[in-house]
Amino acid sequence: MDGTVPENSQAVPSFEFFAVIGRHALRFLEHLGRYFTLLWWIIRHFYFARAYTRSVFRQMLDIGNHSIPIVIFTSAFVGMVTAVQSAHQLYDWIPRSVVGNLVIKSVLLELTPLLTALVLAGKVGATITAELGSMRVTEQIDALETLAFDSVSFLITPRILAGITMFPVLVIIGDFVAILGGLLGAVAVAHIPAEAFISGMRTSFLVSDALFGILKGVFFGFAITSIACYMGYHVEGGAEGVGKATMSTVVLACLTVVVLDFMLASTLL
Amino acid sequence: MINIQNIWKQFNGEYVHCGISLDIPDRETVVVLGKSGGGKSVLLKMIVGLIKPDRGNIVVDGNEVRTMSYRNLRAHRMKFGFLFQGAALLDSLTVGENVALPLRYHRRKKVTDIPARVKRALETVGLEGVEQMMPSSLSGGMRKRVGLARALVYEPPYVLYDEPTTGLDLETADGINLLINDLRNTLGVTSIVVTHDIRSAFVVGGLFAILNEGKIIMTGTADEIRNSTNEEVRKYIDSNL
Image 1 (tube, chains in turn red, orange):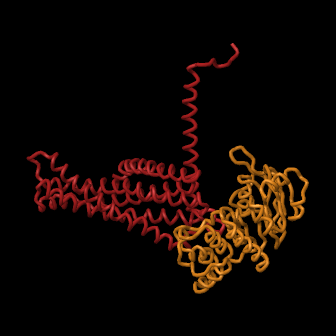
Image 2: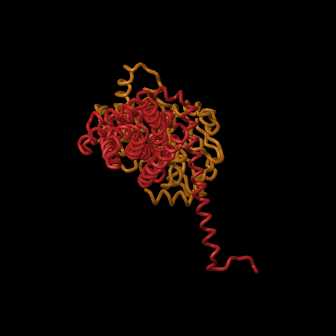
Image 3: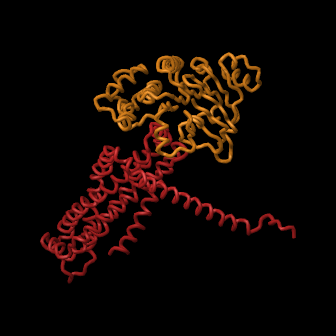
């Protein structure tokens, strides 16, 4: 035996498989390390961001105001669908006011925060990554650094702060609209009297449910904006790189949101 | 004074700089010539600390760039104006806001003083009444001029030019060259110009360094470069003139 692996050996592809897994794992760990390094930089240099408060307000407008229409649209339909499907699934002998109970619980605890975050992962996440990625490939970030700006504090910290503050606000707006949508769906489609629906909602409404949903908004806002900023800030490879990073942001942000959603529900409920 | 001392740098296993050393005297315009992708822009980015060399040092006014803390690095960068190849203007800001950017955040001047300084910087580069325009509505030459105005607005002692005339027509390129000479003559700035445009290089350059395959193969004045018998230098000059 000379120790060489014969050609056409079945062992070669299986080793290659493990090598691919290993390379992907290493790449993932590298990204994770760089992501946390970026977050650590933001914390360490937070005092630089004081100079850029105008930038925070601009981002709050971009992330918050410009997302209101899509949040209203999504939430209205979420509320209506929840009401109609709840009514459809209930037995005849169950009081119709239960639809109100189901709608308010589902909307406040889960549906509005989650679906708002998933929609905004696409809209806000993709926008941030494309913006920062374009700035990276056209050397605008390098230009900021040469002008003695801390580019992370100038570009990333305001976006994350805006995400943390505006996502909960959007969740609150979404909650109101989804409840109104639920009422509309219940009355117009499921033919449930408005009084019954409202009384059902009132009996099961808990402030803590609303606060839990809003808290989710804070976490989702942080996750989406920080991932989007990281991906955009580290773009490589020109326009193609920007496209790939934008797609990765949407996928990664959506996955992170659903995992976070489960973790928060498991720990806080 | 900038001293580049035995710089080595590799990307993805390939060396772009293999022991580069170069001295940049004060109030001089030094042109670094070389092929595209030869590491000229990397050299400029190393001087302002955007990229760290693998080995070697860059010393500016007696301070080593490589070992600077981030706070010191920011102070160091305030000594430089940097004109990027594509001007690198912030798309989301107007021309006036772009030029005012370093003043508004670092110089703590009275806000009333900023518009006047922005106007003056734009006039220096031959532009007037463009403060409210967006970068996307400017031509390539105008973008470079605005980039230069932004680099000059805080009156740095050093200006770095990355391919200042690339992609411009001859007339616009000549305008930029004149501007570079004017800045040296009137403001006394020390300049480093990296370019592969030899025609422009001979218009603006006082001293020249030719970068080839990661090494500086010759330094000298315009005449010394023109009359060089070095085979590599001749090949480069003849193929680009």
